[in-house]
Amino acid sequence: MLQFFYSVLSWASPLSVFPLFQKESSMLLYSGTSAGEFSFFPLTIQKWWTAKHIETEFLKTLESRFEDLQKQRKSIPKNIPFPFTGGFCGAFSYDCVRQWENIPINKKINSLLPTAVFAEYEAGMVFHHQTKKLWYFSWEKNERDFQEKREQIQQKILENAQKKANIPVPQVSAWTPEIEKEEYFARFHSCQKALLEGRSFQINFSQKFTAESSSRSWDIFCALAEKNPAPMMFFGDFLNTAHEKFSLVSCSPERLFSLTKNHTIFTQPIAGTRKRSQNKEEDKILEDELKNSAKENAEHIMLVDLLRNDFGRIAKFGSVQVSELGRIERYASVMHLVSDIVGILDDQKTVFDLIKAIFPGGTITGAPKVETMKILAEEEISSRNFYCGSAGYISFSGEADFNILIRTIEKEGETLSLRVGGGLTVVSDAEQEYEETLHKAQGVRGALE
Image 1 (tube, helix red, strand yellow):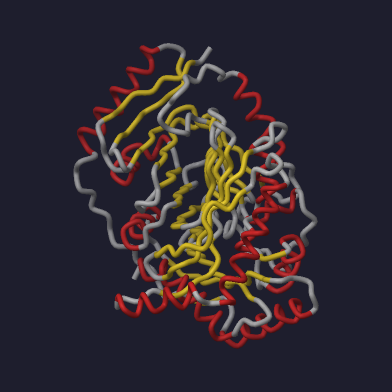
Image 2 (cartoon, rainbow, N blue to C red):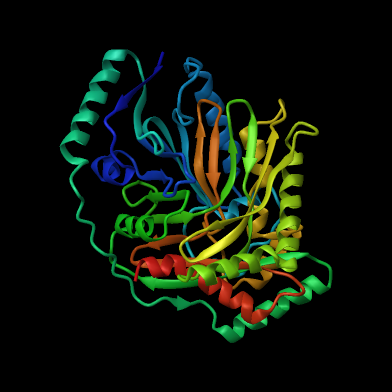
């Protein structure tokens, strides 16, 4: 019978530790700003789970496996100071929604990427950024086995982690848009026609940019962590697995949901954007403009209501509340309106019910969600793949945390793909919306220039 053990290690940053143990894992969940509390580096992959086709019942398979694994791990001590204690870590693509919603397939499937990829983990490191504490945990047969592994890891960190890594500057070619500006305008007006017909209230239309790079995915991630940090960053390098040959590099600012041990569910919708200025006075003017925009606030409240309704499907009656509405959060190239929504998960529901209720996030589809996704399948030039999907973990402790995969690069071979979008309404301006996508893309592209 496996037992859960954990212990403190000497502090080192996740970016310095990850390269030392990358062969034992392929994922890092990194909080790159003061808004992020924990970073997670899962270790010791037990098994890979990959969905190859959108018609597979991957989520049901994952749920069944997780239930079996959790039954064998009831000995988790109380009051563990961190939420991830082993379990599943990985990513769902946007297309996973077609497993439980009748959404047509985009007419141009532009990639052979899987629709989901997860791994089982029985060990890992947890970094608490505020207190500078680093824990190692593992499921072992006895404490002696745990201590031996812990000492090996501690020694490797002490020998190497304080050395300043020589990370090369990524070499990236010019980014090429999937559609030219004129076609973007044509698609924009087609979306507005659907809005005027009453099919949707808001449509989050996206476009893709591609570039070429022979640089390592890790070097690209480190450049983004330095120049465009975000609280829900994710690195997944699947080049060394038997299943796939691609990487995900995400500097996402947006949480899809979190679930705590006391069954609290939490989400943070981001909707409403202005570019940043290096001039403080101009930056404040842009902030006031965003805060006082009737259009932006109306869209934001509409999407807050959408997410409240999503939570209402799986939360205890009367528990869903908006704890903060429409604050301003700043990032490297843009600022956003952000709200906090909380609730209590119904006793008869699980984290997998929560995923089905809220995935994909309404802020990156539009409202109403299902009908709007059908419009997006008609209007977007190619499939979204992992863009607007979600990466995160499901822990044996009963907790979970997932981001929304925006500000995310997919790397296949030497090809980089980056998608950006914005919410369109009947009063949106084509030029302004087009410029907004460029501002969002610049946060990622600019970090690699």
